[in-house]
Image 1 (spheres, rainbow over the protein chains, first blue to last red):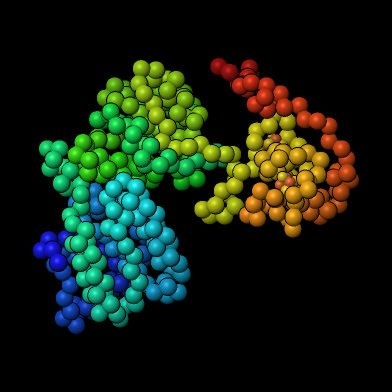
Image 2 (cartoon, helix red, strand yellow):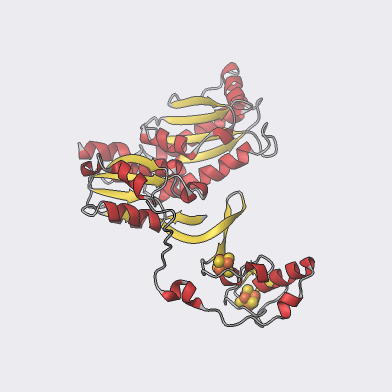
Length: 142
Length: 222
Ligand code: SF4
Ligand code: SF4
């Protein structure tokens, strides 16, 4: 594994993933230090532009974490989030940034271990992909 | 509304290759409603262009602006003071908007970022379908409100072709046969006599066949 510690932004739904992140903390479960958790009222609140902005500002990967399928507090916010993530993946692939830099995860509020595992695995996957290529490009252009 | 879809990124990157600073210009009307070229899509494409070009090591400065309507000269005028800053305008409006901007700013390349696709309606959230081909002589009153020009693959005017099967058109099981829809609706309306009535050959000069069209309203002109 590479020793590069990627910056991973997690948009975490208040009703599940954000609470799960809290539970992970209380359980003393660790996940990579580059993981930054941002609370959103629902995964469905995550606009495609949020993902693009995070990457444009230098994040190496972005994870959207919402409720389990069928369990969304707002009925289908998590499904809409998953569809948007897919669309952004396609766009990122098209522009050579790599579609796998964004992903969707599902969990319930009590699943601290699932949160820690999803954050860790995604962070490892991003570490294998390497840093967000816009950073190197910006250095070359400077 | 007029519907459109963003062009493939490869084509877009090629078209802006030689530029260093562009204005990405959206439109607040049809292309906003069909999620092709409104403020949000402008932001997405701007971001994609910036990141793609950064990755290539040749940054592109992208300013974002969305006009109320790109196909009206008074809105196009809003760009007058700032336009000289740019190497090109990349328009996310339909072809009418692109041409309005290109007509007003003759010295500047104005490029289309979307493929204008058809005049259509929303079938449900996220799905649009062709409904009118602007033939200039509407027959919807005779066809149960279903357009045989835009919705029949062969633009037939006197009933279905032999390919109509189980309500679907022979070109694809995904496509409804317009004449099946017309028949069903005429039955529902109790107007089946309209189905048996022979429609005269259509005069296509009112459509594109008569050349580019124009509407002049002296009472509205100032
Ligand atoms: S008949 Fe002509 S004007 Fe009427 S909906 Fe069809 S294409 Fe449009
Ligand atoms: S199957 Fe129906 S819609 Fe298709 S071409 Fe024939 S008449 Fe038109």
